Amino acid sequence: MLHELAHLIAGLGNEHNPKFATVLLKLVRRELGKEQAERLLAAFSFQGVKILNSAGKPVKARYPKKISRPHFLSFIA
Image 1: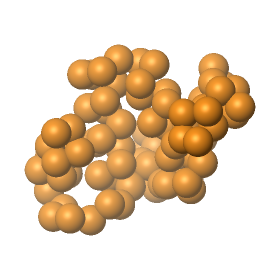
Image 2: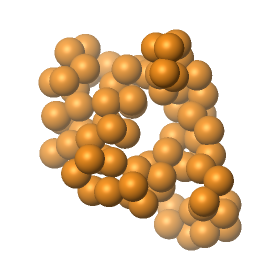
Image 3: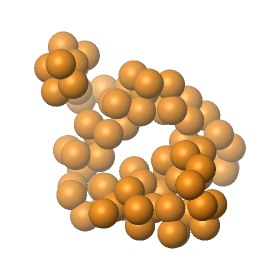
Image 4: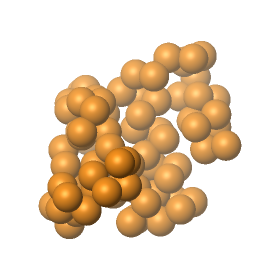
């Protein structure tokens, strides 16, 4: 549901671009909490997804410091 809502908010149709990824990340943080948002950010980093920085420029998502890689990888295996 949040995925589809992010499409509506980003206003970009079906594109999965940095603006969409940023909106999705913010929605997850707001509705599901910080821990879930950090897991999504870790997945974005692992997959090379770009998000918008505070200046609105696309940058590669950075791996959260609080999640160790082996811990994250156990969720996708």
